[in-house]
Image (cartoon, rainbow, N blue to C red; front, side):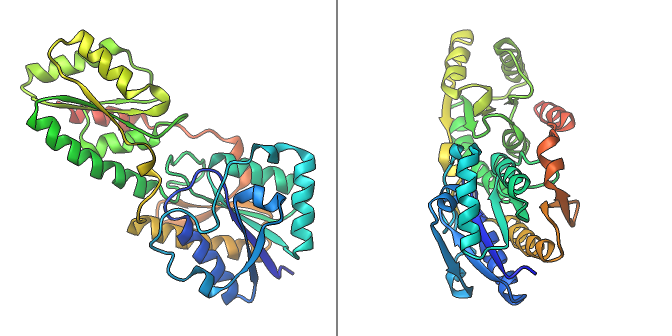
Length: 322
């Protein structure tokens, strides 16, 4: 019978991680299960940086971005001797199951840890990139989109006032899910994605068509993995003399900030469900959302499946740019 759960946040931070922490702790305590927080992800587990958590430990954090448990990337966790130390530390602390909150890389680490030591693992997807298979949305994605939109709305004001083209770079090294949603909601004329290469000439064609149609400013949203905003702006200025293209890199502001309503609710529901899953005997799974339903997905399926960018949404950006 499970008596104590370990909890850690891993990889890049995302708004709503604290909401998920709070939910895991309070759901567990309400069901008679003790919780230990592990500082700085898998590295903290390796260094035995483990502490008890109670209801007061998670008071006043539901509205805070980041993670009170801290987080760090720890590539050394791939090594078996490192995982062996982590497992011994778990056992010494009396921890029967582990909850991991993080993104795609963290899901793979959690899955490997379960496979190697048969420790029950529940995974909560938290990533501003929304790049985890098996869930419609990850914790933090909605907040990151709204943060980017808030900045772009302000950029639109000056772009229109000066009749300029603006290239805005958002996060997304390997996937363009964030860039695509931001482009749709911001009314961008062009979106540049890692999954959908586009040439400078294609971009110029769109911008020139915009001018013929009477547009006095244009917005291009580019995912960081598809190209750099300053390079693209310079190329536009070379190809379109007088265009006065400018660029803005939103960077790490997308990771922080007060979680939105959607992020808070999602994180709270995921946290509650992951505890229930562990107590019901689930061994290696992820909590997710499909439509309006909270679901459980085998972690093996999560890490072995590929999530695809929506062609329909890409077409929607083009359709709205007339």
